[in-house]
Length: 326
Image (cartoon, rainbow, N blue to C red):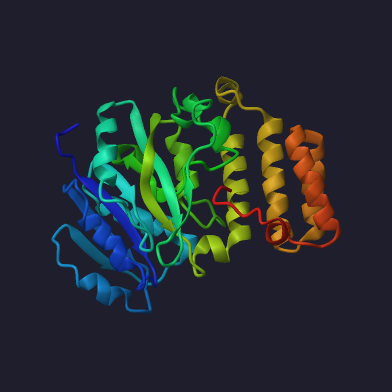
């Protein structure tokens, strides 16, 4: 690795006039200065373009395109990826921001050629920037090999069940690896690119977790995870199941993956989404499948889900189970 490799920052934005200034300023404040930020505006109808154009730093490139929307995010991300020139890719959406030492803290770990992806703790913040909660992996010391994906593919044991690489604002990945897998991934009817992409990256090398806050993930009413919550859950199920089914039997055995574990967890997530969509019968069917396949704890959760399906109630609103993990 060069002494000061270039980091390309992909910043998709849409109607972020309230937040894009903070986003850009957090990049300008980085203690590591060899970066390029490529901001791609997906047809904003507010003052987002005017605010971006106020920043004259030559390291910032601004692209404006007709609105493609969230269901074509991969086209937007890959357009920027193909324009980027850095050795490493970091993603920073227009409503999020970084601490000033984010890039400086992560880059040294990539001196180890085995590392293809680095991530860290995140902070969920509200529209004003007030911290709601910190986000970090559970039981890291116990499951360190899984979270560090050592050897490659080890993380699938957990990643197929829960997208622990969140928030995406903390992630940095080798550009060459993204190019090898064909860029950012987005299966049809899935409203994001991060989870499908990290599953593919998982097979290419090891991860490194930095136990510090490396990004601020803003929560606000117009955010996709708030407005498309059921679709986010169903997208996880589709992505996880498709990826798992495309693995060979030898790969499943090598990575220690079991059908019952993967499928039962995804049936439960699907049931949660169907409760939100008020599809009571479909939700009940999924929860019943979990009773046959799942662990004891998952069976207990599914019994609760069945009760909510029977009474036609939204489990998420009443039990307040919404979490940033799918």
